[in-house]
Image 1 (cartoon, rainbow, N blue to C red):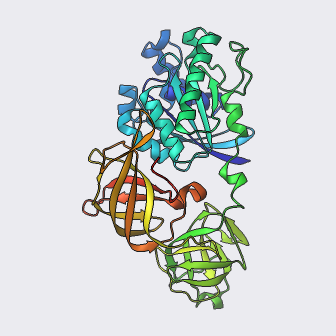
Image 2 (image 1 turned 45 degrees about the vertical axis):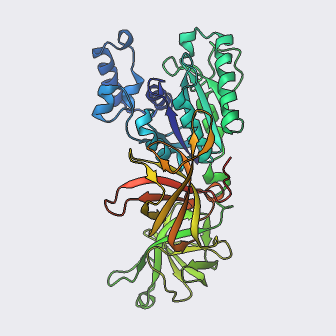
Length: 429
């Protein structure tokens, strides 16, 4: 069974929590006692005459339940007969757009919700711009609350056309547009009789068939591992290892970021600048012949190479050139934002280096056009040059995903100031 990671986003009151609750409910991912508790709470609050409030299934924080908004990214796990899912439920409020960046970075698909009555809003444009800049391949725009338009085909298709025009303006290629009612269940798990004019798949049907990183790129992307530590155990015995060999046991441990490694593979190591061969792949459950992302492993190498936390191991010939300067799209996380000349720490993988940020431009979210700027405020999106104190092999995010992403950290407080993605070919246009 394959795995799909997807994120949900939408403006406040567009019905996102209700949608997520409905998905979990229709996928039968709700325990009986939780279902009973939510049913009772819905009745106590007089929700639509006592009907079921699906949003209560997802708003986990007390402040979320009290205010009726989503604040933090919440991860939900569920499965159907055809596929397993990891859902990142992202906040819709403009104050928490940074959390949407966090939830969407590793997603195979994003569902952006809009209220059919309100049509696309500024926050819709913001969310679609983030999705576009992150290079997410599968974008679903769910036009919600069509029941409040009495399922009127002309009115709903008018909204869909406006959404399609906005997506084209931002640069999103052929997003899937689905008319839904999260509350009534129209076009969520199955096609609705209320929209006979809509011939596309229901939302859950589409999610079951979209390509995922796991199935279409796991064996196509080059192997890469960021070293977390070097293992030289002083006691105990790793599973399956010969006691005599254990005396000289040495392995580099970390999580596989992308691709797959096999016994006998040649690998390159940064910053050592040497090549070696994998002679052992160890895990807590024993030795393996091969391992793929996102498994954490300990690799035994044919040579004693100088490696430490922060080193990068990659399939031979695939390490990107180590750079002292990155060109990046940046997403400030705090109200203070970023300014040209800020001295920061850049954390990528398991290493951190000092750096200086120079802001080139920010994106006008009303027009999607880049404008000259030297300051990025919280929730802005912009382009920056990042000058590093030490060269790092950071790949293009659009080609290699998370390995091309990094955090910008305040060296004094340790607070995360922004997220960045390396986009070396991005132009000021």
